[in-house]
Image (cartoon, rainbow, N blue to C red):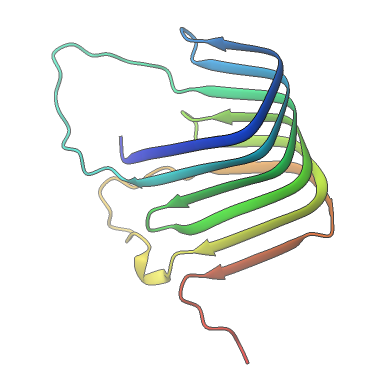
Length: 168
């Protein structure tokens, strides 16, 4: 393991229809869900825990989450990835997400469609000085996020580097 993950999820209202959780298969399947007044914070930091050699190996499969139809109202997703992503956040006033798959083992997120009104996105990359060097012994695999289609109105986005100074 090369990173430590911290996730916090809060919601003032959560409605789920037709869902299953497979503990043995490490899978969550949602057919339909609505989240209102929610926030997800995902923080990935470099793991400083020493590796311990165990005589008995316990293995658990990385979790996979599939959602066919998510409705998000007043919802914020925020993540940070130490030395790479200072802050990545998206706020949805009213949006639908169709056919989403999250594979924590493959570090991949696939979404067929995101559509809605007032989608606000901010991506602040870490400064070039904070990025890991090419000589790192154990570079972490990159996350892949693929979205086939985004349809939005009244939306904003910001893409910049940490500590960047605005142009005048």
